[in-house]
Image (cartoon, rainbow, N blue to C red; front, side, top):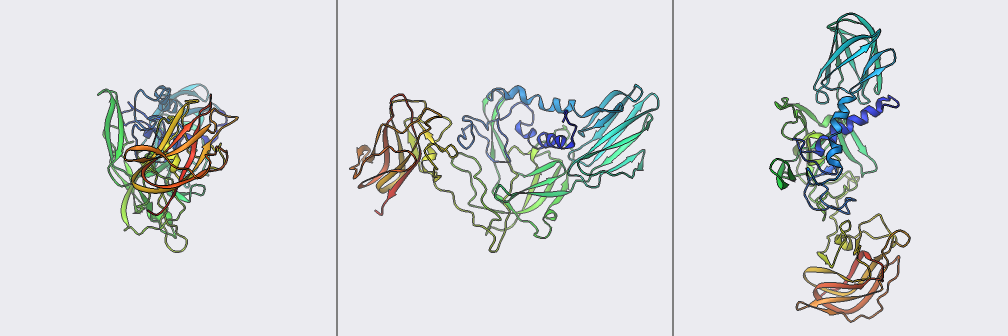
Length: 487
């Protein structure tokens, strides 16, 4: 923005400042978490890796636990405030970001002026600028027209100005200013929908610079820190798995804007204090649940079919929502609607060790690798252990009949320290004791394919792989599948 002055960069700054930054912190600004996503409905201390790249409690609101974030996040609002106003050519001023503020500067022929700005933008559409000067002075005043704004209106001293104000531009008011001059701006905020073609045709709801989230009840639970500087989990208290029911002919007309009171503490970015909301209609998608890591499961292809009843739902600005759904599946019907598929059930799995950025859930998540060095899917590794004897096992809810397994080894030769193992074998649990199966084939350790071995059928409540890693190397598995048989 400072290099080019282009208004698109100002609009992107607003997007971050209004829709992400406030929800990255608790309302009192004392704790923050590492990542703020469009769809997230559980912020707890448990690692979400590899669903999130970083292991550890990345979603926990913690004053102390996120390394450089504690001091960097404190730069956000001050930097934003420092850049509300800019100097321009012709010794003028530009209102680049709209916010309650005042600026004192030398303009025109060097005379000092103060301009006070009164507004509740981005929640309201009006801005009032008042000039204070000890004498008349001519200078240009620029006002940014946001890219979403059609119908930008302006009055000077109560008189409507006839202006051309295309969206995503600046307008210039070049005149001689006197003490007490007033500029009134109105930026109509219309509801608009964005369809995410690369995210299964889900939709987001915008009004002006604000994007909206489903209103989700929040329960905060202190799990660390001190009473003054607590670390908090936030859990949902209301349902979140809704798709939007939209008017097919005029989707933007599916929402009713509801204005509320301004909060007494001037903190609008909370669920309870949101000064504006929207009423909408949704249907639950029962199959849409948290995944095995506690993350919102990925949206599936839409529009989505749902047999659930229509419900009135409320949307609030994203920045007010620490828990949020803001990329909504779209409810549909007829031949073009898709059934939401139940996600594969991950088998209960334990291991002798798992690296913190990997997961035992990768073994049975149903995501098939392209090759042994497939970095695009979750994996399980024993990293950083090298050359050791390790194990991993499935613990079944009841007795299962199994006659073979297939193991897809992880091997990142040329990039890392994992290789296919030196050897391995399969054991089954019988009366609480581990026994080797009677294999009918060889235990292979090939790359880029499933290594399958059959064995005499066993009926068991647990199956284990015992693995001997190569000297000086670690190892891992991308997928472990079973050949189940009828009992």
